[in-house]
Each structure stands twice: as C-alpha cells, then as structure tokens.
Image (cartoon, rainbow, N blue to C red; front, top):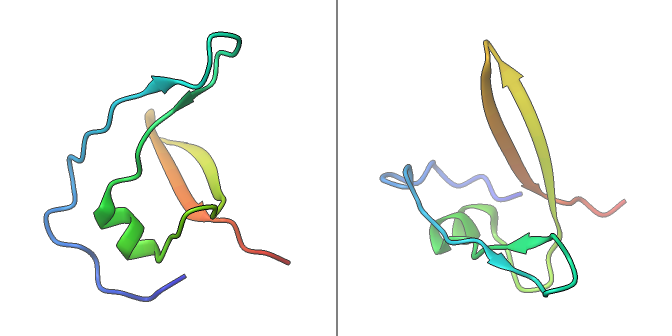
Length: 68
C-alpha cells in the first residue's frame, strides 16, 4: 500500500449504491478518486472489507487485498 500523506478534505465522500443485477441482493458503488489515489488502486484490484465496532460506533476498514 502506498505511504502517501492523508488526503486533506477527503472526509464526507458520498457515493450511490446500485443493484448488481435483478437476481442478486448484492450492491455496488464507485470508489471515489481520492481513495483510489490514496490506496494506489487500479481496475481489477480486490478490496478487503472489515467491520469494526468500537464504543458502539460502526466503522468500515477497506484495504487492498494483499496477494500472498
């Protein structure tokens, strides 16, 4: 993962969820360009999603999947 400085003003980004198909409950969204740049992402990259609850607050941690 790149070691860029945190992106200023990248908080509060909003994307819209879209249904993948009419036969699945999965949804997709666009990854904002600020996050793409920060993580050094490219088309076809895989993301790992982790949910964390700390003091009753839910956070999502998204990181590029590291190939082993």
